[in-house]
Image 1 (cartoon, helix red, strand yellow):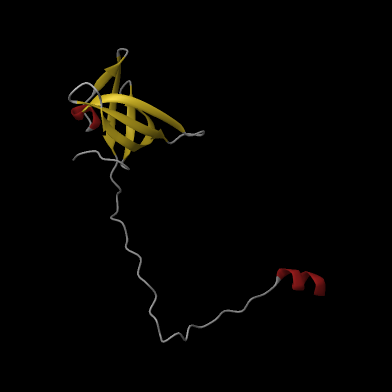
Image 2: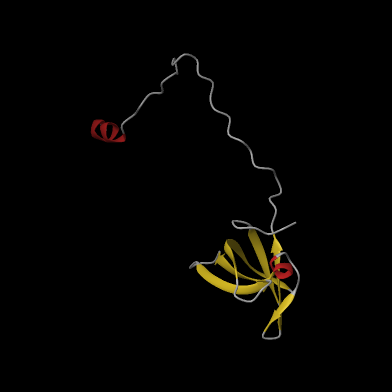
Length: 109
């Protein structure tokens, strides 16, 4: 399963889950067969990492950075996305709710 822009990945560092990130961009590097991968790291505060990876590494193959094992694992939602169902249009005769002003209630107390 190929990893693409907007996918969420779990980054494993030293063979342990470390953080989640969203793939912001994947663009060719000057070195043939390698890619510049922009990751939005989902931490507080948000951070942006730019890593140069080959295609197999983008798609989950383990690699090392300064001797430390690293791996990207694509996250797949456990449930399929639900398409919103528009409410039925009954000829514009929608039931209107009551509006209660908290300001008016406070004045009357």
